[in-house]
Image 1 (cartoon, rainbow, N blue to C red):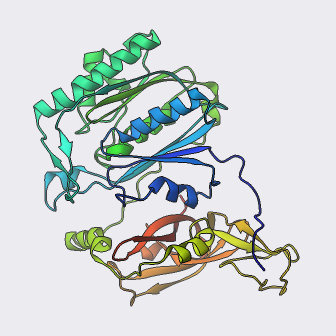
Image 2: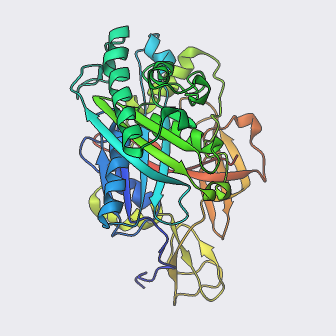
Image 3: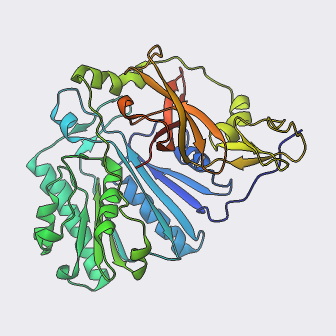
Amino acid sequence: MAQTAVWRVRDSAPKALYFASTSSPYWQRSAASLIAAACDFPADTRTADFGGSLRAGTSALHAAFDSLRAGSVRSAVVAAADVRDGVGGSAEELTLGDAAAAVAIGDERVVAELVAASTRSDDFLDEWRCDTDRYINSFASKFSTSRGYEANTVAAARALLKQGGIAATEIARLALASPDGRAQASVAKALGIPADRVQDSRLDDIGLTGVAMPLLILAQALDQAKPGDMILCAGYGEGADGFLFHVTDHIGALPRPMVRDTRALEFPSYQIYRKLRDYLREEVSGPDISNVLWEREEPQNMRLHATFCPKCETVQFPMTRVCASCRNTTGLCEKPLGRTGTLFTFNKDFLYSGPVQPTVNAVVDLDGGGRFLCQMTDVDEREVEIGMRVELVLRRLREAESMHHYYWKCRPLE
């Protein structure tokens, strides 16, 4: 029978999802739409992609607030992510980092109210990457920092203080992205904000993370904020975007910390690290699949829908037309799987063609029902044990000639 019923409608899902990146996997294909599907958001979710500048993350944030003010949406998610690559052995390789961050925008139970917003556009050549470039190009210099970063960020911040009608000394947290992890101190000095109120960029353990950096530092500031605090946040790139937030009493109900600590994995050698870094770019073993097959399997493989039997309440994945438990064929419907669970069993595959051996294959009992087979990631294979808590994450699995293939893996739940 055709499976047309769905377990539930997610009314609480945001009405818009904006994604920003300077390293999106496709030149033409919406990453925001793919993320919305992976989050199992409904089809009427407004999606948009932002790119082309380090300021893309804050540009997306501006767009989300504009949508709320216009009344076209009541809630939105802004996500930003970058893969920042430098030439092997270069200074950029030591300072650049990969990261992702997301913020929810809405008009209920707000933890930080938007007081003012500002923006500046400046066609200044500082850091760039052409469509044929794999690595980032930059004019890293004192002039680039002072002219491209400090001048624009200070101007955007002063505009915020003027709009908000507050003095610089009233700022409790200064959350600024910067080109070197240190120049934000110069901006604070120019504004008259004490140095101890400047949010640490965590350059040493995270690095310079591109479009995700402003949202990541804002999240770190909110981790330490208390009701009544004023937070000034800014991102830069061919200009600057600024936001002034007032922290509300709802901050106490927010789960903390919001920033997941990095999980460092040790590699036996630099050569193995580079092999792992480059593996997916060079390995082409997946097929180019048709949109007919994609359409048929998208609810299962991207949205993580399983089959639910109303007769015996069995949850089964992959989706099926016959209940494996009671052989029922009537009333079966789609049910979204949980994204967390417990490791039921695992094995270590030394024959799988991967950059690091062995590959850990896991069977996970998901919260809410269903059993899921996948690879493990972000884990030292010596630490894997039955019963450990894990979460599902969407990762690039392999490459085809003209497309990327994504699927779900699991990693330890911290």
